[in-house]
Length: 142
Image (cartoon, rainbow, N blue to C red; front, side):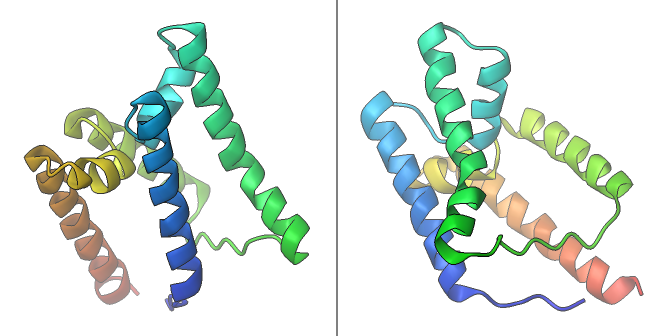
């Protein structure tokens, strides 16, 4: 399995996530944790709380269309596993988010920027298990 190295696309994505995180904190005083944002759409505290979350998710959903309009092609997405493994992965992420008190964007971007020990430990755990998973998939399975 080969992974395409995309430094410019990765840099652009990181800049967009960082900018969105800073703007959300500056305008609404909220942490940018994608899983918490999605959960808040389904279980909002207030109508105003639902509105900003829905707007943010609508922007995420519209971004590939904007990319297509500007470049003439859809972003390339390759998923090297079947639907069953994707569902299993989603369930495992949901369990991890619940026990970890947040997701990679909340801990890795916002929590680490605030020097939260909990977020630093969570992010180190994410990275460790990501590395182990990649190693297992590339070297222990064929």
